[in-house]
Length: 640
Image (cartoon, rainbow, N blue to C red; front, side, top):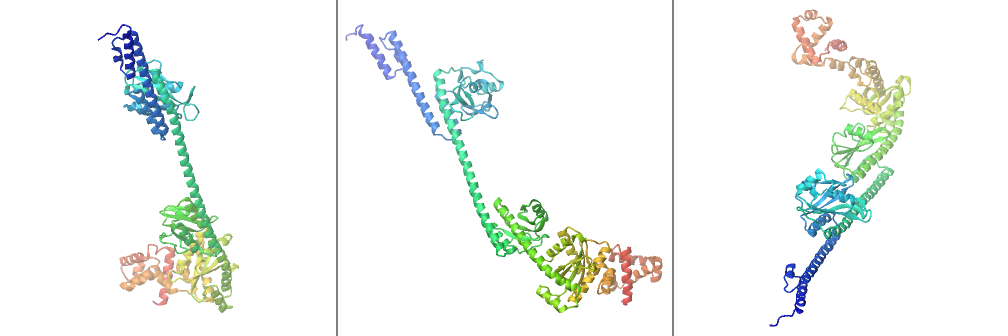
């Protein structure tokens, strides 16, 4: 076989090198081509290196473009940041990658996300501007790289940063700034734009980073900065849209509430204009608020039957009514809502809403508006009642001043006003200081409301500036009890000390006029006795009641004073009444009393101990002793 000539050998070797280069042969294969001269081999290896660099650059650019596409497709900021550090680590083939962001409030940067990190100390690092490699990158807005950070004197080392780097085991570090060309986003401004963060790639062994690797990470950082800014903008947009949606929902809710309030206002106004009463308002509010409504007077007594079940049995809590009155708002108390019904500072009553533990603002305003409507109706009702009461007062005045002039006509006038003078009635005389009589008259109108009575202020010195009330007799309550109740009610309504005397019960104009005289005598007796602010009938005044009372009920007085002793003697056959009479007759001397009774002194002592047990420890006091002695004398005079 013929051998190639010297001229053919290099050319054939050159073709073989070209073929190997075209086939992607390795550098070792190129170095062992037979017949290739040294220059051809060196050129072939150079071409091989250039082609390898181009292929690597092509792969890096392809990966960079894929990364840019992925970042552009991501809308979540956390996902974008995680993708950035993961791609940085993959493109440069480093052990770790991480990213820091600026903290505008604190004036430093902090570790936001890492990939490949194993040190919690490192993951919590914060860098002041200019500190360490990352702080310098953030401050200078340019990339920095070091093959061995721990020995590189270019950087401002701090114990905190060095401890974190050593704990993570990092040696070679590359950091590049994330720059935005505009001023959007937070960060520091550099020559190429605003720094919004720093992207790092690091190895746990010494590693010099080539200019291509620096450029590659800078390219990734550029895409990352845009992706971060876009994600932030989208996040801001989503937040703004959420805020807008929330505001829109609030507006819709407010509009609906305004519409409901308008409808409720129209409904309540229509009730008032059609002459509706308080129960109708309560029923309407009950339907509007889907709860039970009850209306109470200032004393906590019900003015209307409850619109639904669930109202508090004992009425509204006084403390809750006082709180509502003080603040002018509905208040919640033990699962109920309570709103004071006010006319200025005057308390007309209260509304209680049950079965609704919670009320929104619109419902609360509706409930409070219902209290205003209720106040209007109560004022209207009171105005009508005051007008009627003036007419009724004229009847009562005629009844007191001239009962015998036309008794039949007085009875007929009473019938037309809804007062049957043929039935038993009580006469009450109430008194306050002269300058407060008008306030007392208004309070009396409220006390009489719904009770079918009359009230007037008779003119004349003989009436003693007293207010007179005519009330139907209640057999279940004594006249004295009624007087005390009315005194307490008038005092609460006026804020004054009101004294009330009672007379009766009586039937017919003449007897009622006499009962009025008795009531006035009781009133004067209460004033003389210093019992201002109290209420009483003649039966409550002891022997004074016998003297002042129109009927002079002697038997009732004796029974009231000596009843326990009389009953005990009747049951046991003892002589307690006789012993007490002897004791008083002997001037309180035990020795003289035992001689009078012909018993041992110890017997007298024992009987008087029994008297004390039956009558109370004050039986021998001056006032009580006087009453007992008078009762004993009347008892003996009666021959019982």
